[in-house]
Length: 535
Image 1 (cartoon, rainbow, N blue to C red):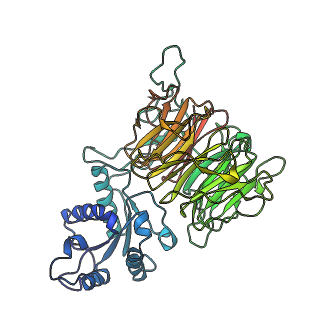
Image 2 (cartoon, rainbow, N blue to C red):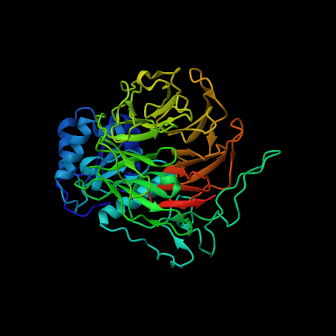
Image 3 (cartoon, rainbow, N blue to C red):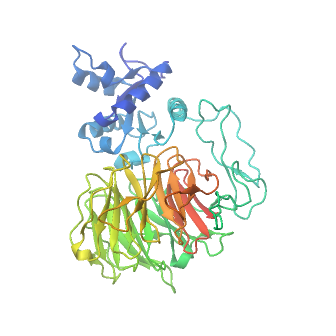
């Protein structure tokens, strides 16, 4: 299949694929799909044959190929050679008008620097049929410069707002639309959900837990990507960690929504600004009067959410990390804050006096990769951390200034751990990872943690987020497959699903959080929406 534009010679390729050694399998899969669709592909794994000068061939390929596909992963973004290749493609088309650089994300990694403004093709969390459909459809759009659908969109009836179609699989007769509606709206419920409570299988002698009574309401506000959500100010406000403006010169923001009247939530008067880059994490101390945020600028910031008066900065930024900060968590009494990120460390901060926070002890080291998530036990004496190195680590923080490792790392996920969260019932920890499972751990003896039950399976891709309800009976998980699942974990040895998965996002769900009273669940996804569910 010829791509618009003159070839510079018989060997000119439609696509040159740039990838790192750890992503060769993905590169070959992408190349195979493209060549099966009659595109010509230049791939080191296939074209570096005996007698060839691959160095010259690669330089020529980058220069003459119509487009460069960069297989994006955390490993690739840390590779000197990978950076050089995609930089060369972007330099040849700095405005992006010719779409010379096409990023393809194969795991849920950030797009730093100049990559953040280039639309990517996201394949992580999809099955092979859906991934193939998304890849080839997006490539056709990149070549044409437009992605108008072949069939007319559905009529947007006021009682039923239709979200963009979820990726089509080979077994689909037509694209599947994922519908959503406000909490207070009438009309037909979305497919798979009804206005009746979704009831899980009941346990003898117990009242069954119920899922949402209504579809998730999309919160009004800027159409922005939100990475994390937290209820603050006693549950009156919902905070969302956002990347803010579209350009690299713009800092991130913390979006606020007034949820005092859940049927009619609305944007708060003003977002919180101060970070100089994307905001990637947000959390609230017990009671919600103190909020912490962290982001790609490498800082952690505190915000006073107490009334009277509007939310406001509290103290100086905490800047001990050497790179992006991906997660923050308060201890149960709100006196200690933990932060973690790209530099592979976990840091503790004394925030008993929020206007004068200070480091608390030495950084906690032990992970061999980015630390994705941190969480305190209810008593605040144990801290859990989950990392891209595939492990969950427990830390004895009873004396925060002398924190130390507790027991051996938990490596059952076998791949990146994306989320860790403690149950209010103290002795239960949940972790979610790239293996698509949620795992429950009995941490009654932190030095000897053990599985509390079988892996919880339901997601068709990586588990990216998890949260316990205030009573500890209900666990929510969000995944790369675009769904939110609710689980009855009253008996951890036999967890049960509660109702069907919530699929309104239609794209990877990055964050979930319960309101302090447990009546509502908030979720944020790659569809650039935040949704509020009444339970």
